[in-house]
Image (spheres, rainbow over the protein chains, first blue to last red):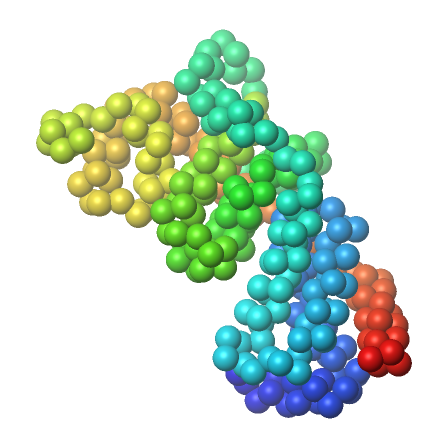
Amino acid sequence: MDKSVIELLALCKQGDFDAFERLVRRYEKMVYKLAMRLLGRPSEAEEILQETFLQVHKALPRFEGSVGLSSWIYTIALNQSRMRLRKQKGVVMEELDETILSYKTRAPEAQTAVVLDPADVLVDKEMREQVESALQELPEPYRVVFVLRDMEGHSTEETAQLLDLTVAAVKSRLHRARMFLRGRLCEYFEKC
Amino acid sequence: MGAMLRLRMISCGDTVAMLSGYVDEDLDPKVYDVIKKHLEGCDNCRAVFDSFTKTITIYRQLPEGEVLEEVHIRLTEYLKKEITSEEGNP
Ligand SMILES: [Zn+2]
């Protein structure tokens, strides 16, 4: 850990709230970004921020620095988000399979979409909403793997470790998640 | 699947099933080549492959959430309140 973080931690452990606020400032974006990706709603991401940093504050006296402060906070935020995610309703597994398999049945004449580039999808508000809501439809076990692997940029091994899964399970869930999302965005592609 | 690979043939279903391994370059090089060949010769699988990689790109490029200053202020106020009340009632 770098020296400034060690000093900050020491001050926080002595009960210095200003130091704790500096620590919050340093890691809040990381937590918020993850929570937004997993939960999709600013109000929920804000609650995750509160729950995470309150838990960080409580557990700080026991934090020994063996994993690095940032990974430790990240794991707390991930667990808080997952607990909340499990209470949400995603699509049922049958529908997940149906969307994944739809590539086999889609007739060429059904393809009415205009030619699109990923860049266009991001500037068009309606498409952006579609992209974001498709992610929120993924059931928790798939969404969390997709977010960590493809959006947060963790490796397959890191994702497996964070979620206590085997590498094979991560790969299989990632593929199904990607296929599901592709199916949901099909109308925006020239061919699908 | 060994015989199939020697024949450089693979079904569309197996190709699609291995697309993640293919885009992540996480396949045995021989299998990778077989899929590459299949994609070159199969319009349907290439369409799936294109939309598959575009989907991944779209999600990778989504803008990151920013913590607005008002959110930071609410967070700090919340923490201060919770922490002080806890210290009052240990
Ligand atoms: Zn094919």
